[in-house]
Image (cartoon, rainbow, N blue to C red):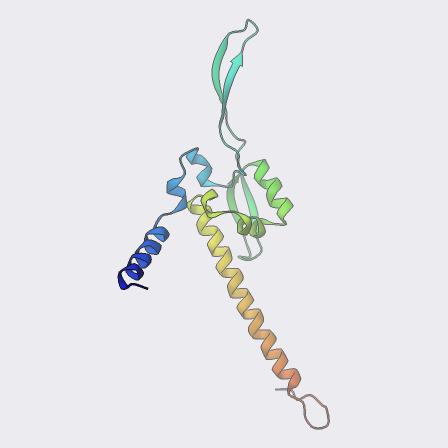
Length: 151
């Protein structure tokens, strides 16, 4: 590969990582502050008994709820819609729901929460693998008579 192309490629990846998904989203900025499950403001007409039309908006039903994260082992207060709660329940919990979400669908707070959960899960897997390797070594550490030694 040409030396200048390698330099250009590394600059491109750095620039790509610096672009955060929540700054590129143009519609409904409030949804970046919680889990809205794809809900956003809807617009339409309110029609009176006489047929007069006036513009109005329908806002999502946003609630502040406490959700438990198994990976972090703590309760988190999150702004959430009933639709998002339904998705969380369907996925099997907050952690699984957050891992299934795309980065561009999340705001800064939820983006940070997702990667905090992800790093904790990776850390727990490494610990589990380390402990399982220790158990294999202890089980394989038998004497000539077949008795296990306790270390």
